[in-house]
Length: 161
Image (cartoon, rainbow, N blue to C red):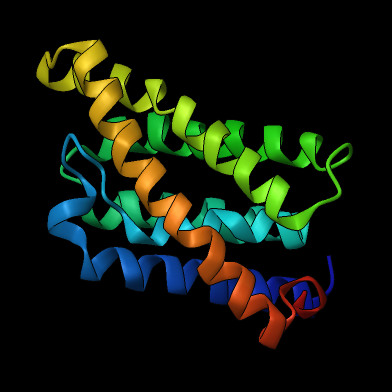
């Protein structure tokens, strides 16, 4: 991995943490309205963003989560699994917006992992928790598609790392 990729991923992780800190009261509830999840779309532009996104999730959960141990396992696993699925899907889907839509569906569906976590930690009802966390994830990532697409026209995410 070259210096440019390391620095780029460090910046992505730092931005993920900063944005998460701003929305902390809404980012760790049973709705999981974490605006920083929009950074998950970076994987569509370059798979090397994987490291920065995962590091951002890990450090955000380490410093801000009320369920540190659970979130370090379940939250990071959710991101890793979802990002890897999107990377594989990217081999077959060449449309940037199409792949961001798939990324949105993958992350939203995989919120069952977070629902399991919240069920174990707080005994929250699994299916209702899956529904609410998935709704928050869907909202953030769906809104993130046009935002990330528009920013990419200017910044060219794929060329940055």
